[in-house]
Length: 160
Length: 302
Image 1: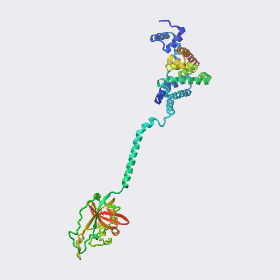
Image 2: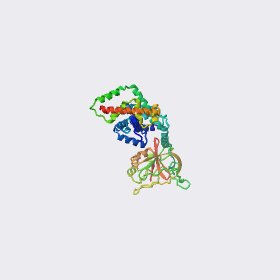
Image 3: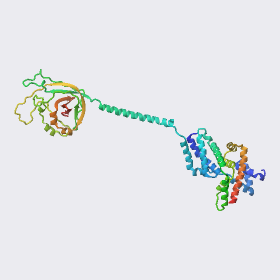
Image 4: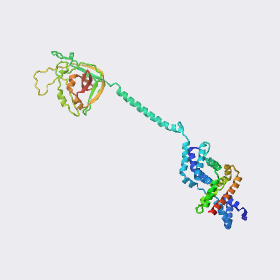
């Protein structure tokens, strides 16, 4: 991959990576850091990655970095944010924010599955390849993830 | 059509969201959902559990962030100094510039060398006028035997004619051998410069800045009594015999203007310098020599 192809990848894949990371970690600045780290990894391996495989490479790197992030971060922080928002009945939340909050209630695997499927349109086998799962496992986990996601949204709507 | 399985409605909704049904199956399920309020409520909740693609909004709102990511590529990739792209692209232009500089330098050196080169050599025809060995004795009669009539000698290299606008070229002779000189205008045979009778005062005042000046410094022709002048004594006129020598001397052109010529102290020039006539090409010049100064050649006429 050349430098010009790298810059093209930033324009085409960068926004999608940022959206994905933001949906995973819930914080835009943290998501930017994770996306930047992912592109730095790509720069290190620029000569070994082809342009056609840049998207899957970047998403795989970002997924690992998101996992590493959550290993170091207490989930309690996200729960606290949820309760703080829920207690503030006067605060108006848009549907987008409700979805975002509900998504943060899911575990890492479920968030990634939903993001890969809804935002990037990956097939079950592609998601399985990136997350080291079989296609059947991806489908099953994704089903459970959507059920949980729906329940969390309902809870937030009821709470607000 | 099969009866909608309410126990498995969530799986049905999941596959419907995932797009795993065909078009006819999808339409049938939607009809069932619309017909059942509970299913409709659940279906609305299931549709909320789908993320929307907002990547375009992310791209617009975070453009500076992505530009910085692109700049990282330029910062990380260090271009080697001797890379082909950087050096090879400039080599032809550098070579051309070096060649032009070399040509200009060589041309400048060549001009300088030409300027410093030896002056053009010209053959100067010198006519000794009325020297002791050429002058007729007072009682001697000029005959064909003792008359030496010089043949015209044309110098190989001629001096450029004077500028008709009034600039008179003066040829400075750098190393002409000393010769006996003196022009006598009254027929005497004296060799002293002070014996040269020249109305140089009149010459100086008569020197005008004309388009075609004619300056006569010395008249080597036989004395002709001025008009309207009473001649008390008869003037003896001799036919002079000339000896002609041709010598090659260095020529150094120095052009002076009429004004500069007029400012010359011709009287002093004539007092200090020894005078002789020289022929260069078709022009006649008076050569003024001085032991301690450079020789000056003055054109007699245009």
